[in-house]
Amino acid sequence: MTDPRPTPEAPRPVVTVVGSVNMDLVVSVPRHPAPGETIIGSDYVTHPGGKGANQAVAAARQGAEVRFMGRVGDDGFGAELRAALVGDGVDVSALGTSRGPSGVAFIQVDERGQNSITVSPGANYALTVADLPEAAFQGADVLLLQLEVDLQVVLAAARRARQAGALVVLNLAPAQRLSAEQLRDVTHLVVNEHEAALLMGATSLAVVNAPEHAARELTALVPNVVVTLGDAGAVWAERRGDEVVAGRVPAFAVNAVDTTAAGDAFTGAFAVLHEAEALTVPKTINITVEYLRQAHFEDTYCRAELVRKGRRVVNVRLTAWQSDEKKPVTAAVAHYLIDPGEPTAG
Image (cartoon, rainbow, N blue to C red):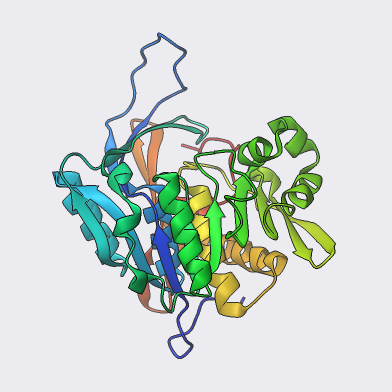
């Protein structure tokens, strides 16, 4: 398959990200504990994360010029998080530092790759509208937003981006029920079944049973919608004048190891490929999924290193590259759209 990312000769899409940056503290567990129960997990590991930072890195690794606006604390994690973004080529000139702790996410991952996450926002909630420099929106092709920072910051950023002529991609996570007025500046909405259900006032089961219907309904709020469905793939809907068209893209099958940040990896890649190729939403999804499928299955693109504790796989490190230049890729990129799955074989 031809690499769909921008070539060095082609103009690089400019992506501005306003969002969170956290240090993820990850522990592998045999299963998630019941309320009041204590279980023994693996040694914990730390990974830079946060929905905003994850999407920024995913966009940068797809060849975009990425500007990041957010806040870290003045603790040791803050310095590490800033350095990690810089290491991936993200412009952090608008990443501020606040007194106090950085954001932290406490993540448990079970043997099926399913996770549970508790986020302590820390400095992320210190980000204000005054921290959004106008220059970061000028010349931007796409603005990427999530909901791990103050909602007023998200809404103000969307307004400024639209005024500057940029597309606005909102990943509605953590889920909040927003009104049509609050979503007026969003051009592309990316949600999972739970987030879609909250917006619609429906149940998650109703969305899973009729996802194309859900995507069509959501175009009443945002003209372009993608609903991700784990191992069942994704559905999309576009409002074209008085007509709404919709469709479905299947997932590819792998053994899930860790689905943390899977949606972030997809959203960042989707934003870049959609803008770089000026494609429709369904075509962009197809290219994104196919590119990530190749990155997972072709040895020339990807190498997996399993980290074991005894006979049990407790972590995985994936490295992917193109040509002769090695570029690390998070596990989430290779595992986009794969929620359920069998444990990796020992």
